[in-house]
Length: 195
Image (cartoon, rainbow, N blue to C red; front, side, top):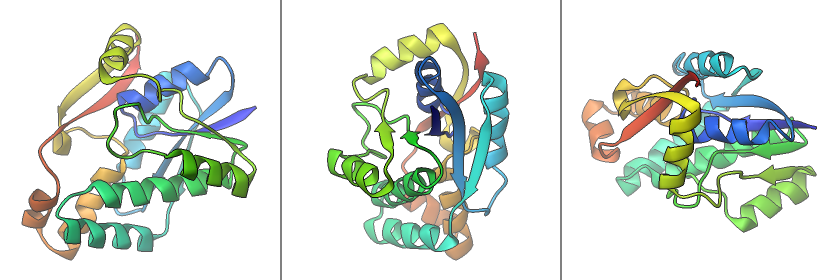
């Protein structure tokens, strides 16, 4: 059975792919808006991991609504959640099984039980979250054993996540200072292959 796994090239979605490959034909799916070519970093990571890759271009209005919300909130959480749910909807239109790399202690994005059940009921799909029972420490140990990873400040790690394009959209609509006002400093990861 084919599974479309939302993929950023980060450690969580990469580890999810490894856990799911025993049970599904996993295709790594990166959703983007076409503002940048950063989705190609996810494609390269998918190639390095040995998985098929598909990119889905979401409507730019989704990004615009998300960045407006982020600017109003002064924080990215609700906007990123909005984009993640739109990406799940897009994947649900293409696959019988959809998955993501959300883990137990994620703040954003997450998929609530109600959202998961709604996706399943409306699209006739199965939603799978292979890391939902794992905390950060357990994931870090599994990643250390199985994957090669680069890490660093979010703005320096090249990957195919929503944040990169949302940052770009904020710059285009307002300016660089708006990016700094919305996004706190944090680290990101990009997987470069299997061990």
